[in-house]
Amino acid sequence: MTSAQPPITEIRWGAGSLARNAAIVGVVGLVLWIIGVIVNPHQAFASYLFAYVCALTIAVGALLQVMMSHVTGARWFTVLRRLTLTISAALPALAVLVIPVLVGVRMLYPWAHPATLSAEAQKLALHRQPLFNVPFFIIRAVIYVVLFAVFGEILRRWSRREDTMLSDASVVATVHRQRQFSAFGLIVVGLALSCVAFDWLMPLDPLWYSTVYAVYVFAGGFLAALGLVALIADLSVRSGGALAGTVTPAHFGALGKLMITFVIFWLYIAFSQYLVIWIGDIPADSSWYVVRGAGSWGALGLIIAFGQFAIPFVLLVSRAIKRRPAALAAIGAWLVFMHVLDVYWLVLPAFHPSGFTVGWTDLAALLMVGGLATSNAAYRVRGGVALPVNDPYLAQAVSYVEP
Image 1 (cartoon, one colour):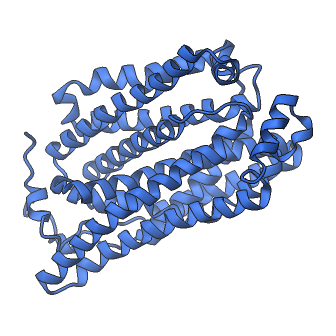
Image 2: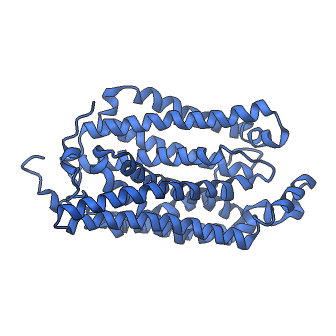
Image 3: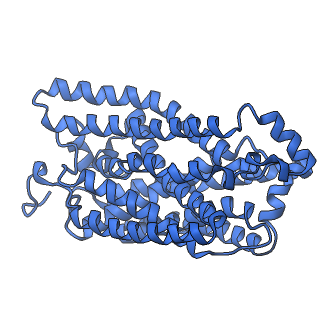
């Protein structure tokens, strides 16, 4: 750290203006979305499900990244841990923002009105009725979002508690407790996210199922979370913010390695799901790809395949690009955008099977969920210390040299 930098204990998040601006964006989106509910409620709730899943998967992806860093002992990530926890700080707000999804259950899911389904789909809906009924769906959804929020808050509070500890032994014990809790949390949060995919997204198509689908949803959200971390870290460093002088090109290089790893992993899961269904050649299974692979939806699918794999893979192969903060931030922003398109491709064909359409309620819902969640997260972390100042591995993390 240069002499121009303040002591590490004084480096705090200054997110007051972000909280205000994001709140304005969120309120504008809320007003527009309410108008959409009045004009076309079916489309408005479909748009909201898309926007909500985008935000939730990114926030949960950030939480999982923190847990993985604890479990694997990734000391270099220490300088980015508070930033990543800041993204997951949106989870309590997202737990509240799930309400429109619960209100719109009957408009979103075919199993909620089986009389409109084909004979085969009706038979399947009757078989699944003990699991897929409105009261039980709502109970499970509440459990999922509460679990996400609770696990995120526990890790965030334990991390902040380190700052006030005077004993090295107490800090080490707290870090060890976070590691143990993260090992448990990876199982619970991972299963809850899988259930979100199986409960909220897969039943949009009443006859289709895939055992790989939950991993696909996880991979996309985790990759987008890494991209968002890279983007925010670069903005902080370039503006002389809280991370300037501590997050170096070496840290960006390590983050870039994680990004290319999950770019490949995302493609592997996507191709595995497609290959198994293609080999099986069962009409009920392939129907999901028939809709998403035809016409404008097929074109969007190709854009996602190239945009979420081919382009970032080619760029991230370069060590120089990975170590260039601005370049990695641009790739990160691109991956967040591609994740939005990916979730759109997962959700909206169930409502518009004839072709790709962009409604103004889609943008309104994104503004609403993204703005309110960001505002809440920024408000809650404002003035907080940006780095775990008493962490025993912080000095090693700051002086990290990429292999």
